[in-house]
Length: 243
Image (cartoon, rainbow, N blue to C red; front, side, top):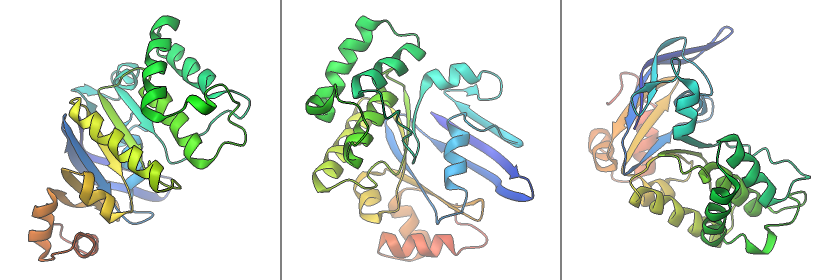
C-alpha cells in the first residue's frame, strides 16, 4: 500500500505539491491523472521515495520514506517516463545489474529473467545491446528491471507511451496480472480509454492539489458527466475539489 498525507514540495520558488493526499491499496490499480505541470510526476516520485516531502508524509507498506529509504526502495518497482537504458549493455545485462543491486543471487535472477522474458516476449533481443532498440523493446527491458526483485508495489509512469497496438495490449495484460497477484499498482496515463479499461480508482491532480479521488463511477457521479474524459476535465477545473 502506498499513502501520501498532506505532502508539500517546493522547487525553489515553485510550489509543486500543495497538500497532496491519496492512498493506493494492494490488489488494485490506482490511476494518477493530471494535465502537464499539475504535480503528477512529482507525486509519483514522492510515492517511490525518489523525492522527500518538505511537509507531510509518504509511506510504503507503512514505512516512511524519510525514516527507511532503502526499505522503501526494496518494496517498490518504479518505471519513470524516461527509461534511461545504458546503450552498451544488453537486455540481459540490464536485468542482472539491477537484480544484483537488490541483493539477488545470479540463480534467482536467472529464474526470474526466464519468467520475465516469456511474459514480455524478449527472447529475440535478450542478448543484444540496447542501442538501436525500438521504443517497445526499450520499454520491455525497463519493465523487466522494475520487476526483477518482485516488488509488492509497482509505479508505472505512462508505460504504454510510444507502443504499437500489440505492445499496448501486452502491457495492459501485464498490469492486470500484477493486480491479480495482489500487488499495489499505481498507473499514470493520458489515455482515458486505457484508464477506463484498467483502473479501479483514480486520483486527479491539478495545480499541485488532489481535486478528485475515488472510483471511476464516483468521479462521473460527482462531476455529473457520463464520459470519463468529460469528468476528468471537470475535475481538473474544480477549484474546491471533489474528494
